[in-house]
Amino acid sequence: MKGWSIRKKLILFFLFATVIPFLISTIFTYQYTKETVKNRFISTNYQVIKNGSNDLSDYLNEIANITKRLYGYHPFIKVLDEGVSSDLGANQLEISRTLLYLYNTRPEIEQLHLYIENGHDSYTAYNSKVSSRGKYDDIYTQPYYSYLNKNHKFLVIEPTHKIYSYNNLSTLIDSLPNQVISFHQRIDEIPSDKLLAYLSLDINMTQIQSISQRLYNEESEDFYLMNNKGKVLYSSDSKVIGKNENYAWVKALTSQKDHSMEWEDKSFSGVLMYEKLKQPFEDLYMVKRIPYSVLYEDARKTALMNVLIGLPFLCMLVIATLFISVRFTQPINVLIRNMKEVEKGSFEVRFKSLGNDEFGVLGRHFTSMVETINDLIERKFRLELENKSTQLKVLQSQINPHFLYNAFQSIGTLALKHKAVEVYSLLTSLSHIMRYSMNMKEDIVSLKQEVDHVKAFLSLQKQRFGSKFEYELNIEKEAELMRIPKMILQPLVENSFKHGLETRTGSGKLLISAELNGEELILTVSDNGKGIGQQELNQLKTRLQQSYNQTDEHIGLQNIYERLRIYYGDHASMQISSQENHDFTVVIKLTTIEEKRDSDESINRG
Image 1 (cartoon, rainbow, N blue to C red):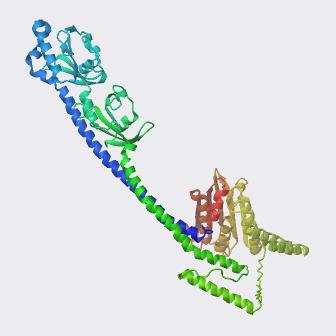
Image 2 (image 1 turned 45 degrees about the vertical axis):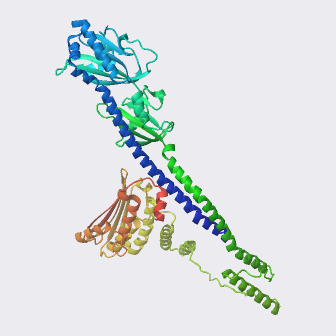
Image 3 (image 1 turned 60 degrees about the vertical axis):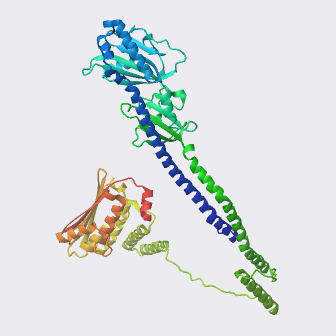
């Protein structure tokens, strides 16, 4: 945007200031309306489903209670107890009268079947008539009678199915409905639990359909009445009635604590609500599915209305933005064009006035300035003024390390010419120390490099102290290959001279050793200097565990330990032991690890 003109920036700013708030407001309004409508829709529809489940439960209870009426009719119960054969004519008449009475109590009853345990007699009432007596010896081949017998239940509902003839006693005609729901009930002697009979009622779907159709919109919503095994008793989709549908949403819905959930799959995207029917039909579920297209229809209409109302005003704002931006930047463009002409040497103003506002004032001042410059150029004969300035550069030179190395080499050569071999040897050691110390490219070196550096340092100290100082190096060959942080040993050796050997009156000795113990590298630096007492030793160990302090007397030890902790973490340790006026020993233990250049560089950068 740096290269954009003011006009473009103004247009973009005004568009952002108008269009973006409008879009954000529309989106938030739509989202809020959508959630509000969804919550209200779910609440309303759940209440409808709940009321519908109560109505359906009451209706099914009415059908189930038909059988209970028989317990108050003693002649019929007596026939069931004694059997039809005890008085065939009178008993059959009683059975026929009772079955027809039950058949006519509800118009949706399509068929009745009565099985009498005493005598294994079977009767069917259908088409307003009662069949002749039939024998039903293998009664428990009928799965629902078998279920009632095994589980000692008094009622079981057979989900929607095609009507069939019980014991081949019914002659079913085409006028009968194809789909029915069957109530299979057990009739026991009271107060004992002796089985007297089984009674089955087949009812058509008219009443269930009537109750269900009040609960959903046929054009846009789906409705299911199903049991907990997925068997559909009734549905808005007639093709699935009486079938086992293993819908994935059934298990997901019934496992929810709430009575609604959102669901999306290939065939449906929307909200589902369900309600269990009351006792004794709690294994039946009433489910309603509402697609998002229906759920959010009102929200979309509201959002569309807002857009249609706001769009004309938005267009007016855009047009006003363009007009204001053009009018605002037009004087600036006029001034820019005239300035370009002045740059080319044409001192002639090509506009009369830019108005009476700030741009007009700027235009008048620009005109006056051009006229003044033109007058000066003409009066001074277009004299060219040149200002020349010179800048002095101060050269700063730094002593190049190579200069020092070359100087050492020259001095060493001169020492050899004068047969001063010891001077040459000392210069070589000093050169090695400086080269090693000034090499900043490597932070991790081999133990052999570190030991060679220490040897050079010790050779200088040996020259200084002579026979008053001895040192011993015990370095295992395998340990020389180990990689360690640079400048670890030399500060320990220097620390021995500073705090121990320099102040010792007698002969000083320094021992440096390195050995491998499995994957652990053990470095030891020990001297026979003045050492320190137990109290000072404890204080030193405590300070090592604290933050690095440049004012501390033992800055070298702290610096080394801090660097080791950075490189190795918990894989590094430093142990210090000392006896006053006897010795001072530092033992470093490092668990050898693979050198990782990237991590080293990151440490260096830190």
